[in-house]
Length: 151
Image 1 (cartoon, rainbow, N blue to C red):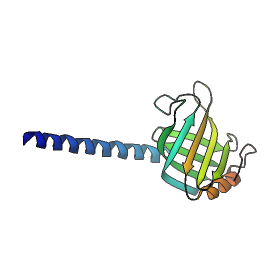
Image 2: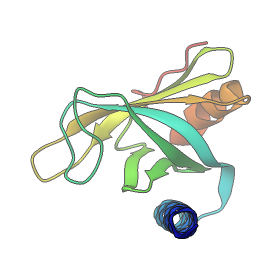
Image 3: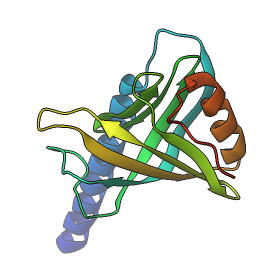
Image 4: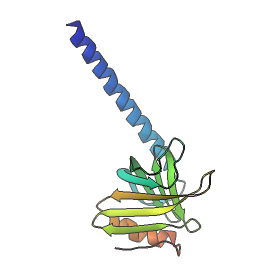
């Protein structure tokens, strides 16, 4: 009987720890996506596949499909993508990239992330029902000649 109680106690502790880790990640993601500007579009906690060409310390690894929950925030001047690692990508008129809808509900965002070792290319794939809206609105808001809308 004591083995059963021990197993249940370990299971409860593991579940509580997982919940605390998820709560902490959510808080970090929300903090990284906070802006002082009016928000045009916002998506919280969407599942994202992240590809980078150079590994980021304590962040996404190069050569792997990195999956994470992401927050997307589009203001009149920039598009932010934040994960529990912090701000993953920020596109604006000076730091343009590509925001496009590649299929029904499939949003692909590409750009360069500035880092100490030099810039690295980042590609984020998101499945969302309003991908077309995100792509067209981001194209208008960022206004960069390097931004592209394909659909």
